[in-house]
Length: 126
Image (cartoon, rainbow, N blue to C red):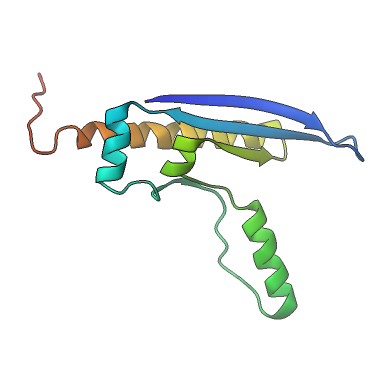
């Protein structure tokens, strides 16, 4: 598995604000794709930001839940396999998200490596 990261920026049309976009995509080998299907890993969430604990009530609660859904970033195995773009408010947020996704992708790579040895054995030299 290879993780491909692309950083982009663009200026807003009506404002001088710059928008930052991180696009992530995994290049998977055929056998890795087969393991994802075999073990039904496609919907597995690798990264998710924000956690809303107080949902509120009434119209204000509805508005806060809608805003939360728009700001919440979630990356699944399927997202990583097909590619996903994530908008960030600034470079610091983009780098933080990038680091978290790198760590999640490494963990997922470890899962795929373990999947290769089901029904067989692995010899580790110590």
